[in-house]
Image (cartoon, rainbow, N blue to C red):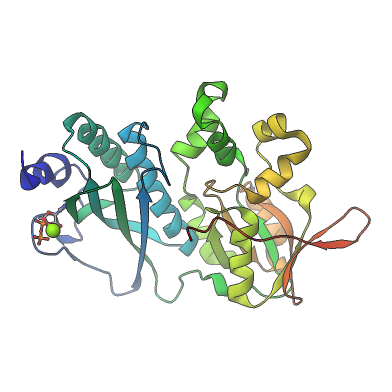
Amino acid sequence: MNEFSLIDRYFKNISFQREDVILGIGDDAACLRVPVDMDLVVSTDTLVEGVHFLADWDAYDIATRAVLVNVSDMAAMGAIPCWTTLALTLPSLNEGWLQRYSKGLADSLGVYQIALVGGDTTRGPLTMTLTMHGLVPKGRGIKRSGAKVGDLIMVSGDLGAAALAVSFLDKKNELSDEVVKKLLQPTPRVDLRDFLLQYATSAIDISDGLAADLNHILQASQVGACINLEKIPVHPTVKQHHHEFATEFALRGGDDYELCFTSSPDNASEIERLGLSCHCIGIVEAELGLRAVLLNGDKIPLATAGYSHF
Ligand code: ADP
Ligand code: MG
């Protein structure tokens, strides 16, 4: 098998077919039709062996995770993911691995009705880069920079389980499947898209940890925030394992791919009425920086450093 038969066998026909793909895999470039009333939203994420996944992971899970983390970026923008390209670097031609990888890719792209429309295949250390293309109604893409003083700070679901799974990587069988899945197959919150488009003033997906990612919103919006640590939704298994450190774990742990967003306080009752399992953890303030309010009312500064590759 050579590079071209590999592409034909494992990538060319695996993916969801969409009518807006004018040209997909097989030409020098893909050609896609963007509706006139939509903006094109583009994001790229790279996964590197030893950094984002380990060599002994099932290739199915690696492919799935690569798709889901890219879909999560679309969710944070309020966009519908539509098309993706894949730049894949493989150390060798391992057909068993490619079969699992291709199946993981096909299954996860199928769930979100995303077409694989092109890519590049090279030899080298195992690395993959997906570039996701999505659509958002014209001018409505949700930015990090829209948070306003007085806005509520919301989190879309439980935090900390993925980081817990990372800390158990060599003894995964001690955790429930549900917790391991939070790491291997996170659920990008595309289900919140209509809600976010209507109510969010800013949004980000939580990949590096709540404190670090919320801080990106604060910096982009040139505001600060005060949060109540008691209000952070901590996954129950994290509470079992870490007791008094559970909140800290949820605040710092990455890889959950829930959303953190801000919304006007006028929407508080509407958010509650919709019952979307979103939790209000604090308020946007004019004073820059991230703080936590203690039970006695005192405020303490919170560290916001997240994972940095350099
Ligand atoms: P080029 O020489 O123009 O770079 P390639 O020979 O690299 O083209 O790729 C041939 C076709 O296969 C192109 O349409 C490209 O987008 C597609 N392709 C290559 N690798 C992948 C991949 N891993 N996944 C999906 N499509 C791919
Ligand atoms: Mg090429």
